[in-house]
Every structure is written in C-alpha cells, then in structure tokens.
Image 1: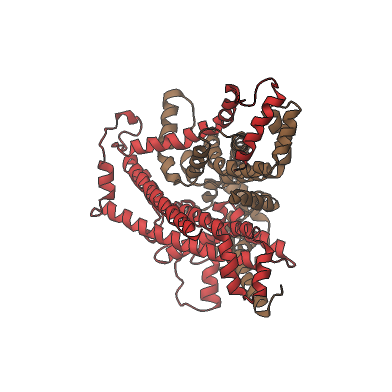
Image 2: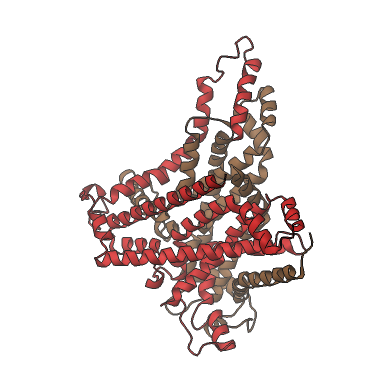
Length: 279
Length: 330
C-alpha cells in the first residue's frame, strides 16, 4: 500500500506540531537548569547568558534535597518490591486457578483504582493518626505508612498486567512441570516467573513510578523528616526568591531515573496493555 | 478465559498422575488444593481491605458524624448526626453548596475537554506512527516522555513556562510575536482554567497514545490492503477500519481517562501551589481545602461520598450504554 503525497505531508505536519508541543517544556527544563539565577529572575531567555552547572550544586543546600531524595528512594523502592511480590501471587492465582469469587476479586481490585484518592485520604489520615495514638504504631508521618499506602496504589494495575502476562505463557509448561512432581509454588518460581521476567520488570518500574510521583498523600501524610520529593520540590520558592534554575535542575535530576526506566521498558508496557485489552 | 479450558484438562490428568486407582468421576480437588488460590490472594486482599475498602466504609461512617475540629483528636466523641452533613454541603441555596456546584461544573468541563484533546492527540500520533519509517522509535519514546515524568516535575516546569514576568509563554506571545500589549496572568483569573487544561493534556495524551498504539498492533494489515484495493482513501480507512477496530480499547480508555481527570488533584495542586483560583477549583482540591482549612472532616467526607456516587452512576451508565450498543451491532 503506497502512501500518497497528501498523507505524507499530513504526517509531517502532525509530527512536527506534536514534537514541538512535547519538546518545548522539556527544552525549557533542561536549558533553565543551566542558567545563572539572574536569567530566571528577569525576562525569559531561550539560552543561558552564561551556561553554568552551579544550580546542580546549589540545589542541595537551598532545601534538604538529599533527605527528600533518600526518603523517596526508600519509600518507592520498598513499595515497588512489595507490591510486585504481592501482585505475583495474586496474578498466579487469577491466571491459573478457577475459584469462587475470582470475577468479584478482579472487578473489585480494578475498580478501587478508579475511586477518587480524596475519598481514602481523610479516613486513612484519621485511621493512621488514631492508630498511632492508641497503639503507638507510627504510620502517620512515617515512611512505613507511606510504603503501605503506595504499595496498594500500584497493586491493581500490577495484578492486571501480570495476569495478562501469565495467561500468555503456555499451560503446557506448567503441566510438564507438574508431571515432574513440581508443586504449585515451584511451578510459579521455576516455570512461570522465568518466562515472565520482562512483565515483572515492567510492573516493578510502574510501581516505582507510581510511588515516586504521588503528591496528594505525600502532602498530608508526611512531616519534615519523612517528606518526599513530591512535596519537597515545592520548597524552592521562598518569600523573596524563586530559584527556578535550581527547581529545573532538581526536576531534571529526579525525572531522569524514571524516564529512562519507563522508556527502556515501554514495549513491555505496550505488550502488557495489549495482553490485558484482548481479554 | 483460558483457565476455563484448562481446568478440565487438569481434572483429567490428576487421577492418572496422582492416584490411578480412583475412577475419573471423583473430583480430584482436595480441600488443600481449593484453598491455595485464596492463600495466594490473601496478601493482596488484606492490603486492599486495609487501605481501600475499610477506609471507604469509614469514610461513609465519617460523613454521618459531626467530625469537626473539636472531635478530630478522639473521634469516638463525635456525635452522630445522620444526613446533616449532606444536607449542609449539598444544599444548593447555601454558599457552600453553590461553591460545590461551581466546582462540579468546572471539573466536568475540565475532564471532558482534557479527555477529548488527549484522545485526539493520542489517535493522531498512533495513526501517523503506524507504519515504519526512520526515526519512528525516537519519536515514540519522545512522545511518551511527558507521561513518564513525575507529575510534579512536569507541572512545576509548566508553572515556570506560565509565569507572568519570567515565563516562556508571555515572552513568545508578548515580546516576540507582539500579539498582546499587556502581559496576561496565566495562573490566576480566567486564564487559569485553560492553563490547567493545557498542562493536563500535555501530561495525559501520551497515555492515550500508548493504549491506542497497543490497540493498533492488533489490527491485521490485510484489512488496510483490502480497503485500499476498494479505493478507500485515508479518512475512509480511518472511519471504516481503524476506529471500529479500536472500539474495545477506546471504550476502556475514555472511561479511565475521564475518571482520572475528574479525580485529578496533582495537576492543580502543584500548578497553583495549593491555592487554586476559583476558575480552576477542581472538585478534589475543593474537598481537600475545605477539609483541611476548617478541619471539618465530616462534611469533607460527605462531599467525597457524593463524588463517588456520582462517578459510580456515570460509570455504570456509560458501561450499560456502550454494552447495549455492542449487542445491537452483534
């Protein structure tokens, strides 16, 4: 099938417009991170008057960025690993067994994803605070509380995507392992998981991104000691100065790991979405 | 679906492998076996109960209490007041009710426009990137980047672009193109709604693109060949092949995007620094601010529950209508 001239030009125009729309903010983020402070305090400039890496140094002392970064890293990593571990077992059950309540479970789990976060926020806030007062288990303003909260946020989609992946692994493999005397857990760990590595990695990155980018609960459930990047990054605007160059530098630094991870694994996300959508 | 076909296989195999003397009529599933899926699901179920289901039930309970600042520390002292919170917040003649209704309309307009534009950009990109050409992989990665960025990094960058005196938008519009004489404010006043919309579309359209791209991979190339042989042009192929084949993806995608944007908190919260102008007062922000400003969690919960009910009704109606139409086609 040949492409007509009109289609070719249409494609070029659409791609140019979309590229500009996407690239301009990214360009501003990158170039402004290399600007001296006076460049971002006066009128906008397309290029730094004097390119400098100073914002990347200053950003650590204007706000306690290192602490926010460590908090975000700890919370997001633990939440991602736990979420995926829980999701693997759940997805294995949904994919390989027929049991009473299977449909109800799938629907309920997915629908919680759709509920407004604000609906859980107030009760969860009160539950955490009151639980802390009553039992001394500190969930409010602690990293543990954030980990538990975030791991459930990524759980529904992780389960859904992993079910798609597990379904695509031929059952003949399970049965061969069972004939060799493997129980269900050995089948899961020795047959299914090795075949689903890309899916598991993609889901881990997704769970990490979810926790890394969460704003609403982070803004309520943290104090100065447990604050994550999502809230901490807003600290660069003081009453007198907004350090836009440092904000852009910090935004760039905290974005690179997740963007690289996501883009490296994007085709597995597409595969997971396709597998899920077919059902 | 696939499980239903394998279950009989497993049944047939089990007696042969495990206990060959038993007849095939006996159900091979022992109690241990049937418990296993529930054990596997237990961690997920416990977490979902603890963080989603129980707080939701508690939220409904809270909405029936007079849970003001005097009772927050020990909410067992809060008096039960029935539907009073609902009457107070949803009373459209009161000031609070008018503000809530205003916020509702803003949110509705925001969601519909945001979903519409995100879908439009997503389908355009997916269609023009459907056939391979040099640089396609790079463009695809680039287009996905806004979605991969942490939401606060993306939105903070936009708020820099939209600054009145130091932002790129006014620099281009006023200084370089000279389209306006005055430097407009983008983050307060009437413009703030449109700023919010653009930022939200920028961030969400790659998700639509990703889903539609995945959906297009399932469209067999022969369909296009056949359509081309019949002399169908670009628009005709789009209307008769691409869009019908994408229907299942679109059904889910549009609903998910709508629910996400309707519940959106992050974008306005970061863009406006927690004090959204009334022209961009989305419902999540509205509930958040009125709850934490006055520490009246009872009425905050009432508004949240009302929001949930509205979304449930909309989702159910959407699914009913789209399912019925599918039956008509079949």
